[in-house]
Image 1 (cartoon, one colour):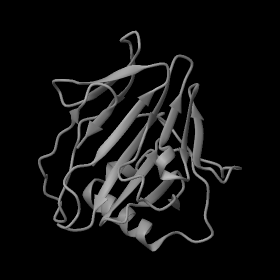
Image 2 (image 1 turned 60 degrees about the vertical axis):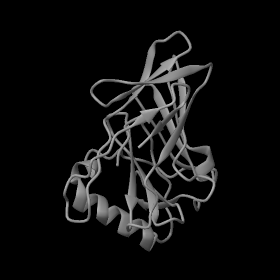
Image 3 (image 1 turned 180 degrees about the vertical axis):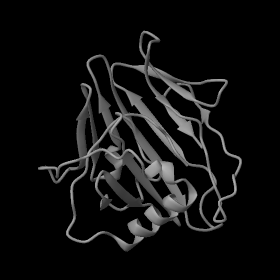
Length: 195
């Protein structure tokens, strides 16, 4: 599953997580394009930031603590998207340059991928049929705003004036054999997208 919302960079760990590598392998098998165009990054100086980068005036950061989510800030807006199951997830583990993994401790992992074009693709890897069926991505627009589902399956993130500040690509999912799995977003209008 994937959400495109902004840009980031990554810190480096001494040893990559085996869980993270399994998630990365699953993404490579399901949709290799997720792992193309990954941003060149430098290690973060902060223990609170797992990933941070700047691209075309947009600053994106991903906290080590999953409850802090993915933050994207530019000249005219600041948006935070929380990762699914953040209250139960382990802290971020770097698995590759520009890529970290959160073990959600429920047969899923969330793997945000920092892209060089100024976007972040947030993927959730589902390990088996016991995993949850719904994944919430709460969104906060600083200064107020809303979230709107578009006819093409994309999601628009709007500021308090109703102006577009960020977007989310259509939801997608594949099973273990690479077959497409029907999926879609629903939104609550105020600040959340579910898939």
